[in-house]
Length: 305
Image 1 (tube, rainbow, N blue to C red):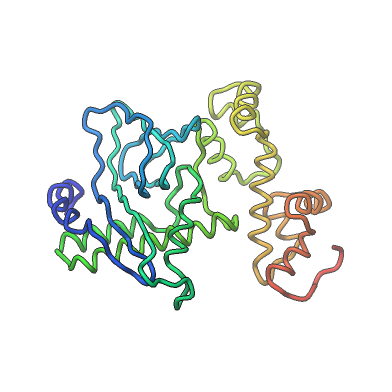
Image 2 (cartoon, rainbow, N blue to C red):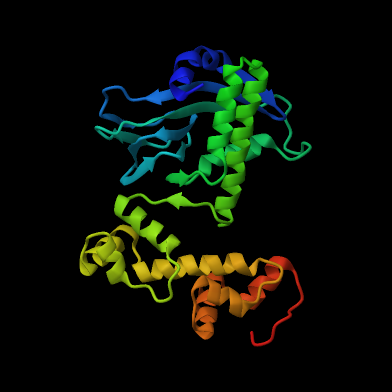
C-alpha cells in the first residue's frame, strides 16, 4: 500500500485511536493523529497549544519559525513542539510538504509513583517539555517506526496494539532527549539554509587543512561574504565550527576501548598532537587521555599525557 492509499484509508483508524491510554504511571491522551497536507495554504500564523506535537516530513519541505529563529524542514526530518512554545509555519510554493503529525497530552495516573519498575515513564515524557527547538535528521529510525505503524494500521490491528506502537515512538523521543542533554551525537539540522549547507560540507569533509575559499566557491559565494554571513548567523567562524566537529569526532573515537590518543587525533583531522591536546582540554576540561580513562574507567595505558 502506497502513501496515497494510506492517506485515503487510515484517517478513520487514526480517529479511533484518539483517546486516553494508561501505561505504567502515566495517562497519555492522543489528541490528534493525522496526515499533514497544506492544500492551498501559504502559511500558518504564530500560535501555541497545550499539547505536544511531533511532525515528521515525508516529502517536500516547509519552514518553521520558533520566535525569531527559522528552520528549513525537509523530507526525513522531524521536529517536536512542546506545550506553550510559540511557533509558525511557512509553506513552499511548488514544493508542498506531506507528513505525519501526532499530538498528545500527559498526566500522572492516580496513585502513580515515580519509583516504579524501570523508572517513571511520566517523568521521562514530562522532560520532553525541555526539548530544544529545531529540525532533526532521522538518525534514530523514526521513519521505519512510522512505516511499521502505518502498515499495522492498514491491517486493522487492535487499537491498543497501535497505541502502544505510538508509545514506543514517544519512548524513543525520550532516549533522544537524554542523548541531546548528554551531547552524545544527536544531529540537529541548523536554522538557516546557508548554515545547513555549510554544516553538511563540514561534516562530510575528510581533508586535512580546511579551505574556506574552496567551500565558498562550492556555494557560488565569495570568501568574505560567506565568512561574514556564517559568523552573523551562528556567532562563530567556519574554522571554529570545523574544529568543534573534529573535537566531537575525536571524543567519539576516544570512547572506543582500544583507542590511542595519537590515532584518534589523526583520524579526527588534527595533524598537530600538541594543538589537539590543548584544544581538547579547552573544550572538555581535561586532557584526551584523562577523558578516555574517565569514559571507559580504564587504567592509563599511554605515556605522554
